[in-house]
Length: 448
Ligand code: S3P
Image 1 (spheres, helix red, strand yellow):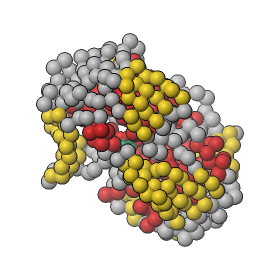
Image 2: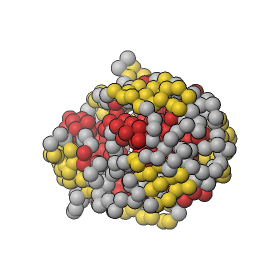
Image 3: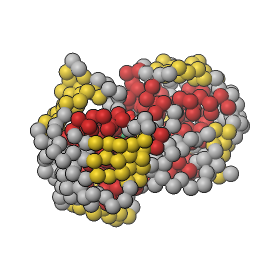
Image 4: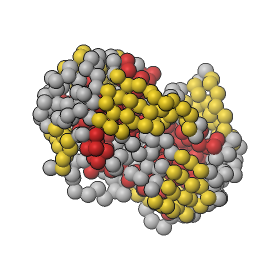
């Protein structure tokens, strides 16, 4: 949905101990993929725990526009009757993916090898983001794309009439690019091979296998090589979506910095390609424990217990960990402000092309709240001042970026003066219950 409403200014003031259980919503990455793969099956796919954030709702609407029957059964339960691999209908209108890079890039991948033409658009943030990283490999299958200068949306794709399979080495660490190529490979005859030099989140590979596709992964000198056999008949599934570690990050980090806090965040997916933040926080000295570790639906899951951690230390976060915590750097930088010493985050160039330039957005907002930040093109460093010493008092721009808005609201929970955010509206894209959930733990957030 590209029509973003009026800005919702928000303020976060220091609060007493955060306590209780934080049931965060379903995983955003898995939710998009469940809808897309359900739309490519012939029978009925059912999904429980779907994230009903705007990003995912926009993908559901897109699947309807391409011909799938998508039903909201209520309470996070959804069902789909799909069209089969290669069975997309041509949409009548423009496909509006709102704020979601994942939504638009994955859907472009699926349609690229089907004989349909579709036009994609999004909000001001999405329309500024690079799409050539996806349309370049899709061209190898025979798909044509015409967009604005610099490969920006709005953009029209003409799907390949006679797609050919592709071998592609992904040039940037991106699960969206990898997934777009794999989804395109679904309707190409023969084997599509994707190689990633750095492992990124592997939900697409796991889910393709679950839906019955022939897919294999092996380590090679070039990197992680994924081979998919095209034109499978996908089998309709029941998907239980685990809770989102990227959303869990917010109550966890808040508990670490607010004195006296003790918060349980149950049922969090801890796929190693997603859990880098929690490793990093423990290295910083966080009191963060995994309880009740188990396997659910093929994914490792645990209940996270986070308690106030008075002795956090700044650390060097290695570049090799970047892909497994790429969405968590904004909130990590907030925790880093409360640590003693410097936290350096390297190998994070991709942060500059997210919903906003996240290094720039966080650096400016942290400085406005009395924290020193250094930055280069692919690194940044936050100079922690220790508990009780974060000034706050700043007004921060959220730049149509949900994670920037939430990160600064977490900052305000333990700062000496209130922290204001110019627009909390984007939070609804990924974490629509953020406000009541944090308030239920004891946070003091207001719309002002
Ligand atoms: C996602 C991949 C990541 C991440 C995004 C979700 C996905 O993007 O930032 O929030 O579901 O595949 P990139 O592929 O651009 O790194």
